[in-house]
Length: 143
Image (cartoon, rainbow, N blue to C red; front, side, top):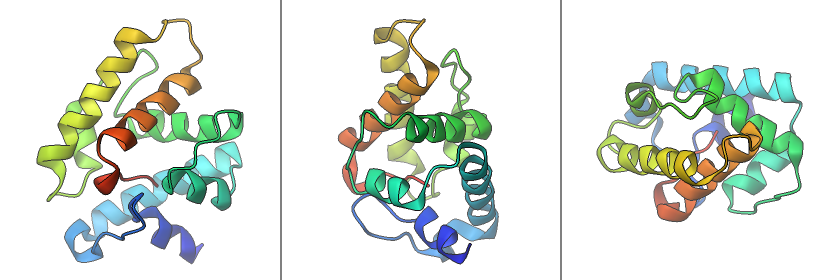
């Protein structure tokens, strides 16, 4: 799945991050997470590419499950939306951590505060990802 590595590291604005900036550890970490969730959820590469391009299918339950899988398997956030800020930072490129980490954390906290606790976890993580995208589409990272 060579294409997985390439699209894993592209930004929503169709720009790719310089692999040298990320380092092998980051590349391997995101690829492993992506592959795990694709296998677990059975979402298509086409659905992932559409989301990265800002096309949101609010009816696609499988894709929402994939988004939730990424968040939960990364251990950045648990099902109760308790955030581990260090893990969030570890999934961001070093040059973008300072300005992106607060965006991610703010979106997690916003969804936790405004979405009913009994809402499906997939919806919560989908809303978090949308929030991050709309707050900073130029630097939005999705794999």
